[in-house]
Image 1 (cartoon, chains in turn green, purple):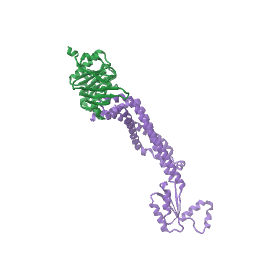
Image 2: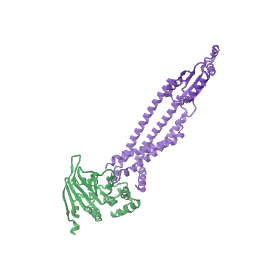
Image 3: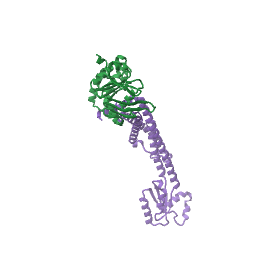
Image 4: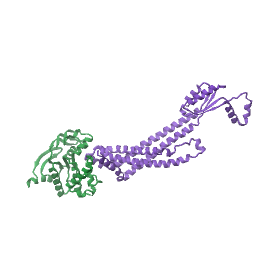
Length: 228
Length: 300
């Protein structure tokens, strides 16, 4: 569960990135967070992964009060969520397998578990055949899927995905959201940050719109799934 | 942490040395030069102390006893001198031996001594002090012994030598300290460059939940490994340089003896200590350098 209570984020540059945001995302939901560039979407993501703390207000994710986390507790919290970055943030010198496996090593999993889990998540994103490839040898779409596999490696309760379709063509974009929907159907809460309104309208579901740091829309809309 | 994951981190640290060969080699060279300079300076310091001790050992205190002193008093003086740990090479010269020595010193005029009514040479003790800084204190003690008439000591020589030794110690210590400080700065900066090149990797690890310890361990191992390699290489080079220089002073030339250049420390006697100290210092420098350098990139 994600809960933001009266959250304000004020940057030292004088920008008010978020203004009095109140938000609750329940376990098992699939939520699109939309908004124009500079609306505050990335700040929201940074808050949810404890990269920054709010200037005022409180943020709870997976039962953690993020403002109170310090040192290794931040690391422990981050292991409880999965994050997919817009620019993938994969270690380019590692193979696909290593990029996923090292998250499990960070979580101090056994070698036996790592050997079982990595092929499993790579299968989910249909990249099992590329396990031995270096990340830099993959296309943008494939790298995106490696990033998803890495985020899923620790079986997180919450998956935060930042602009995942930014580097993909439309067909790949729709496939990717389908994949995220499948992951959500398995019980993982998915928060997808995007500015592609067509995609959001197509899939429907809960949409949270952010404008100038404030939530201006938070409702469920019907998508193609419901139309069919 | 599981053994398998700890082993993975250690392996990752060692393989990083080869993966980042250029930066590793730069760190290795910097460490090698630093350790070589430090170990050579330490060896010079140790040998300077020996040379100064050799020169200092040529000091001699002459103790003249009172005229017609009784044998009991001579024995008493000898006993007191022998009990004193700061004295060495205690030598007794009787009146007769003294006169004989006098005669030899006078050469062709020795027969003049035959016209003297009695033997003018006093009973004498010759001693050396082991620690020149104590010479005045020791002379005071000797002067107060019953039966001692006069004590002559090379105060100027002793004090000049103590001054030279102190000045050299300060200079060498300053050089050593400067070298260590410069080494730490250069080594940390070199490693910082290496870490900077991998800052994205560190940031990614932080984002996916790695603890600072998990991130630092491979860098720490890498730094230590390079340090140990550089320490071993520095030891080998020190051995070559030292033995070449040592061979020059190892001969029994009078000129070397005059300057106290004998009894220098042979490298074989201390080679394992030098190796251990070099490796430990290299590992420490490498480890400290990486720890300082990675800290900045861990605040994510």
